[in-house]
Image (cartoon, rainbow, N blue to C red; front, side, top):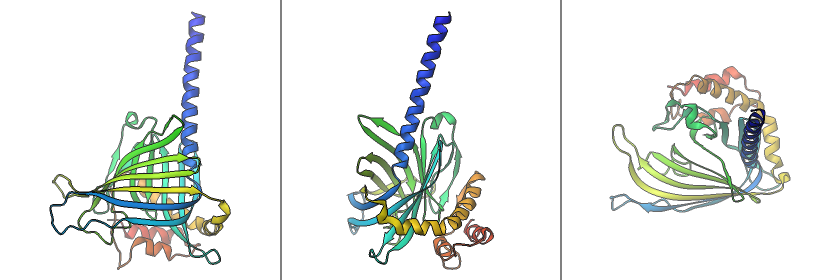
Length: 300
């Protein structure tokens, strides 16, 4: 009996060690997203299903950028990182706060995009997200954008994560297209020795209340993040050091909203301005009360 118990204990320990190793690989893959990168953005509309004879497909999109991905916070169950664009020439660079992504292990609170700046809250069973990481993506003003949950896969020398997520229109189309209102994103993130890639197979959907979604078109996206010397992104690092406390206050306000576990609906504009315009105009020493008042004004 003692030998049996010893064998059972060794088996349980081996499973525990394997699980720990798997999670460590997950965290290493997620943190590999951080650093200084030359980015290539590529999007092409692949299929059109419109019955309108005058339908015009979106033009192909090609763009390049230098981007710093700053590790903001991390522990064994959570990683937060901020993307910062660097534009202009080497002697006079200009930094733009870009999107943010948080990764949460076995997260049960979801805010899945619906339509019209609305993110309904849903509580998931722990069994539904066991071993999974939620990637929650935020707008430049740290308001919600979209999220998906899936398991990181490490096999045959590859490390990747794939999920589906409903989302608002991409920034490249939000001012150009009014013929669809939801993007079903199929996101695939993969880590390589040269950096990482973000591959997308997206549906452009027309969503109306009490009706079945209509598929207008599909597109392919392939964005590559090739790692370069961190010194090339010093301007972004300095920017973040100067402004991180103000944006920490912004995140604190949003985290309070998320913690209420209620549906989130946002106004598009307040007094003719978008949320990011108010926040980007703040000084780095802006007070929490001022930030809270701005964000609250955009909530329904």
